[in-house]
Image (cartoon, rainbow, N blue to C red):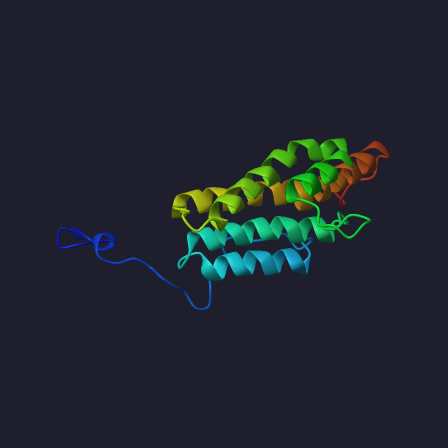
Length: 167
C-alpha cells in the first residue's frame, strides 16, 4: 500500500493472522491428514517461514502415509522421506512426473528446519505452488481423466450427455 509517498511495507509487516488464511486450497479427495499439514503451514507462515516450509515437508510425509507408503520399514526403522517418495513413484509410471515436485518440497523443508535458515516468504510461496501442482496431479487430474473417458465412452455408444446436446 502507498500512503503520502511512503509504502506501508517499509514500516509494517504482517506477523500473524487469526484465523489463519489457507495457503493452499486442497481438492475434496485430499485426506484429512494432508489438510492438517497445510493448516499447520498456514498458521505459522507469517511468523516463521522456515517452520512453514518444514510443515509443508511434513504434509508430504502425511500424504505418503495416507497413500500407504509406511514411515517405518519391516524392522521398525524410520525410512527417509527421499526413500518414501522414491517408493511411491515406483508404484505407478504416471507418478514419475510428480516425484520431482515432492522432492523439491522435501528440500525446502530440510532448509527450513535448520536454525540458520533464511528462507524468504517468496521461497515458501513457491513451495506452496509446487505442492499445489503436485496435489492437483495426484487428486484432481485422475478424476478429470475418468470423467473425460466416461464422456468419450458415452459419445462412442451414441448416447448424449443430455437431450439436445450436440457437437
